[in-house]
Image 1 (cartoon, rainbow, N blue to C red):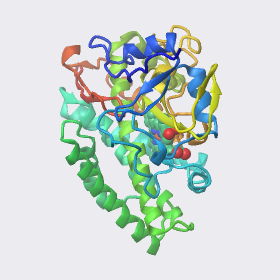
Image 2: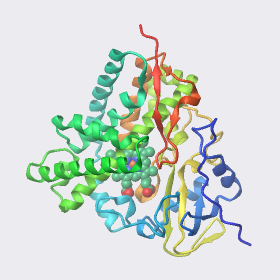
Image 3: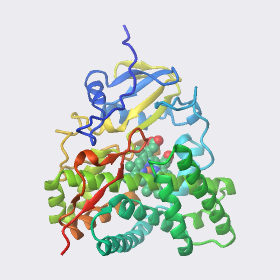
Image 4: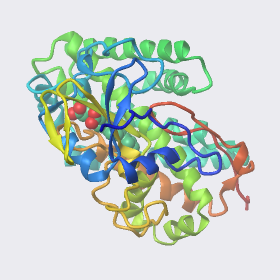
Length: 398
Ligand code: HEM
């Protein structure tokens, strides 16, 4: 007898806002591949176990095409999603996906990432200097977590110096989780239009950044602009929220912050653990293209499967004592960047930014602490990327 389909648990516990919704842990234990009722009425699946999520993400019998997919959160369309626009490769399958992936993968080279490390060091130092000059109290999100990744995207896309102030200002409007959704969407559209114009300008005068190099491929103008906008959307909100929420997690675990400060060279391992523990891009999805037998059940062709990356990354079968933040843990194998053919293309860039930005912050301000009681730190609610809205911080000057 099949059990009643579940709804996707979304509510985090008030006193544990950095943990996934408690309902997910219960499901992972009892029904790691549960039948799930989607807000539009579709009945598909919800995968919460690490091994199950990983297997589905890598299995070509599951599609990533948006137009086959039912949206797991309330507020989506009444039926499947619209197809991916040009450049939005997460919503495509091979061969369209492979074409974009090949064109882009060659641009995220080790050499370029090394060059970007030097840039992120410069950018973080400048912003930490500005924080120091300003003095406490500052909102860490506005002063640090937003501008650092925004300027790194400028580096990646080759946004001219003269446009960067405007670019980060518009990017801040995109992030403004307080603003109505329409305003955020409008801000992203304006930024997308700018990237479009930039891409067309680079067609005429090619440069040696990622966007400039892509002008020398067979991408059409619409595809080129689409890729630029997609990189912007994929790389900005994610990394910014990882810096913000990562800082909050360290402030709430002072012993861990002290360990990072004492051994900044341990940052690589620390960042992997923070990525696992926080899993800010908490939910993914796939659609079965045929009947697939998995974990003793049959997922029927056409069923959307929601992949709870955050539940998978807290699976005790994969990570012992999973709800403890332990920066010394070897967190390799986490799914914070997804898995399989769509695994995050910008993960090395994100790592470069996090490995520099977090230790630099805690080393520069050894007494850094929240300027407000924990219950007053406002977290994002019900957004596709988890994060902090505002994080007022203070420190001892001296
Ligand atoms: C895909 C997370 C930063 C570019 C993904 C996916 C996840 C993810 C979970 C997989 C989506 C799926 O399977 O459907 C993150 C996190 C980041 C981060 C947590 C920061 C901490 C970045 C950055 C860039 C980037 C900095 C580039 C500038 C992309 C691209 C894809 C992707 C292009 C699509 C890959 C594909 O479909 O083949 N990311 N990301 N991401 N990410 Fe990231």
